[in-house]
Image 1: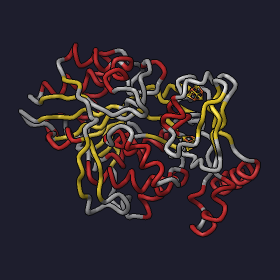
Image 2: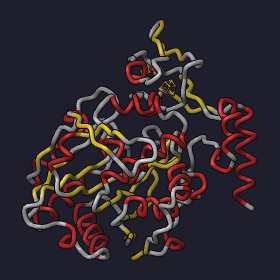
Image 3: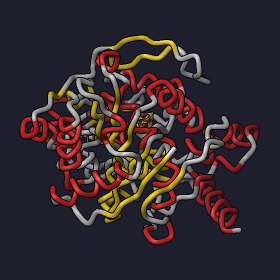
Image 4: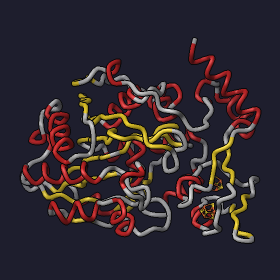
Length: 376
Ligand code: SF4
Ligand code: SF4
């Protein structure tokens, strides 16, 4: 399985077109993936209706480029994602620039809110999956994630991007059902095993570091990362972002499940020449501990959400909290921590960046120990 990394300085359409072409050529070219008449789902990251310069969503210039390449091969491009929260996907897509990209390049933006149930015999946890029904009519999926940090999963990339194929608020139910980051990551890997996107093209031109996936800061990374395997793209993207695999729960679980035994052959740039150090969200390295210790200490070391003074009481967080543990009082959000599962959906979806991720003193101490462990 090949993964390619090419440099791309900015979102100028010409540069994006050239870099994507070069990256996919390393894998065998678009003609290897798309046949005439194929229905192709282009799946960007549409976490929320945010302007492209916020670095929350896949940049629309990449979506435009891929629509053009699909059409050039005679394929029929469809663009779709199901954002987190209650925002209708079309409204979010308009703000993120995807509707304009579809209009200008001649693709249909599709709604992924209608569910279907599928059996996933290869799953470890999520065997009866609810996915977007429109997926069933597609011949192939082009997965287009954005490289970002994530409060729950440390990094969000190609595997995590497939979570957007879970329709609407069902995502919140899965957060509740698989509340630890390792269980949640197993569920993400189950989705990846079922969907198996044929091609992944990651927007790592400007990524997000710190309080990702929606409230961190943009970080210039100047890369397009493409691959035949979504896990392979994450494997190298995390290295490019300077994040150790042992800190990323999907990588930890993938290794344990034998998914990293296949080799990902890197083409294009070498990691040592392009590495950028992403600042991580507050996160603990639970992965390094045996399961029984993790279970015992879990409540004491996981980070938790904290409402900041700039909360305006809009109630977006309360409406999207899977544990229904947020109430609005006197125009301020209040969290009942006895039910909080630290999924950070609230922090992810707050339109005012009014939720912080906090660490307990114990967590800080623990995290310090983990850093020392990783430096050895
Ligand atoms: S924390 Fe954010 S989402 Fe929640 S009520 Fe306050 S402003 Fe709205
Ligand atoms: S308060 Fe926030 S972190 Fe806690 S369960 Fe609700 S959405 Fe998740």
